[in-house]
Every structure is written in C-alpha cells, then in structure tokens.
Length: 372
Image 1 (cartoon, rainbow, N blue to C red):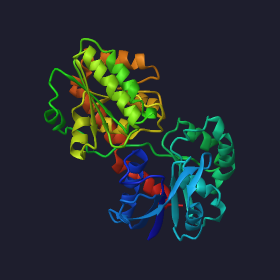
Image 2: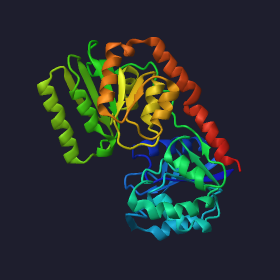
Image 3: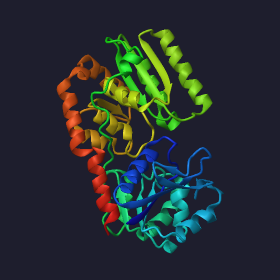
Image 4: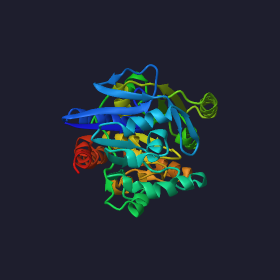
C-alpha cells in the first residue's frame, strides 16, 4: 500500500479550483489501495479527517517572495522526516510548495509537481524565484501540467530533463440535464439566463462581466453571480452598486448575487443556463469551463490559461481578451439562438465525455503518480 501526501495551500472546507482538484485526486487514490494524507493551511473549524483522509494542518501563510508567517521549520521537518512513498505538490508560488524547495534534496519520497500555471512567471519580482526553480526542478521525479500550450508547460519542458506529462482538467459528470434552478429562482422563458460562478475577487473579473451585460440592449437578461468566499467588502459593494445602477437604467437586465448554493442548484444552474461567461483576469485551466462543457452549454471567456486551446479543440464557445468581442459574440449567439440548439448541446457533452470526464482523467493520474 503506497502512502501519498498531497501538499496544497488550501483544502476543504475552503472552496476553489485547487481545493476541488486535490480533493478529487486524494479521495480517488484513497479508494485505490493507497493511504492518503493532506498537508495544508490550518483552519480552526476543520476536522482532523475529511471523508476518511487525515489532514495535517500548519499555521503558515505567504510564499518565498512575499515572505512567510508561521511555523515554517515544523513543516520542513515534517517533509524531511516523513515516510511517504510519494509527495504531490499542487501549485507553485505558495508556502506548501515554496518551503519544500529549500529542503528538496533532503526529502526522501518520490516528488511530483503539478505547477498550475506559474501565474507569476513574467512578474519582475519573481525573477529570482524562477531562476531558483530552473535549478531545482530536476529534483522532482515527475512534472504534470494541465496543458500543452500554457507557460508552465513551456517552462517545464525547457528545464525539466525528463518528459513533462500533461493531463487536461475536467469535470464530474453531474451537470447534464439537471433541473430546478430556473423554477426556484423564477427565471422566465423569455429571459436569457447568464451564469458566472467563481469566488468574488478582482482578479476573477466580475466587474468585466457586469460591464459586458450593461451594454446589451433590447434583450431580457437574468444574470447570476454565484460565489462561495467572503469577498473584499468594498469590491462586493462596488459590484452590487454597478448592478443596481444598470438595472435602474435598463429594466431588461437583472443581476443577482448568490452565496453558497447547494450542489443540487449548482448543477442545475449550469444545466439550465443559456451561456456561461468567465471574464477572469488570471487562470490556469478553470474548472468552470469543463463544468460548462459537462452541462452541454456554451462557454464565453477571456484568453487566460489554456482556455483558447480547449475551446479551439471543442469548436463551440468563444475566447477573447477583448470585452467588446465577447459582448459581440454573445449577442450573435443569442440572436442566432445557439442556446436553443439541442444538437450543439449534445455534441459539447459528447466531447466532454470523451476528453474531460474525471473518470478518465483520474485513471491517467493513477498511472502517472503511482508508477515509476
């Protein structure tokens, strides 16, 4: 029985893409004759185990560039003195990975890195950080990226002497033909239901989403911004102020804010929306894009991470860094009634099942992580 440790900055009950991805991996391996544990940031309300998986918590914050706060030596000793067969580090530029780099040569376990984008690769302040990583990356046994085109893959391919593996992101098959959201929230048949699901942060771009909606004329829009975090109060107030102002100027536009929607209504929101919009300023490979695909729905978003690569392969949806182009394409889709085309929805879902269903992806991870 292999002992596997997943190191990630945040984990359940925190909600986010990294948390979800690692939890899926951890719980899958825990059922496949592996003994799995998590190392993550301390949360007082968290239990010692989540779904049978022990959680090792550390009171640490920060990264090597911003500096650390907390018991960093305790975490490094934990890694050095551990008896795990495999340690998987999920995402760079955060303490759970960065602290390992300082002692990487002393960690006896097989070490696997899932970089998740290297979002600060072109940031001047992180230049020394990546200079160190160039030298240290070959201490890892494997590097697994989420794309063949994004910057973390290109960086790793250049400096990692072994083959860089790629496993695309995906979604669970829980989103297709689910009902309930439209009825519960009284979304009328003549309204275009737009969905935006993400934690509310400036970098997630909800302000851009609202701006796009504000420029739609003569079409009834019912938009929902669903989030799970405790956002910056000023940013949230700004978003709500802008939304109310838009509604006062154009009664055809409704923008709703909803927190902590249950899985039942999350799944049906994806399934029953007409279009999913994602105007995030930074992503690696957003889970919501694949959840939209799993629902058989059309995704429009900004050119971040590997979104263009995925949507180009899918041949539906639309990716652009220009808000005006996203607006233009959305209006064109609405006028052409793409949201009514059942054949298109079926093709999107079929593409998802063939390429991005977690059942397929987890098997790929199993082969990569548990084999030498």
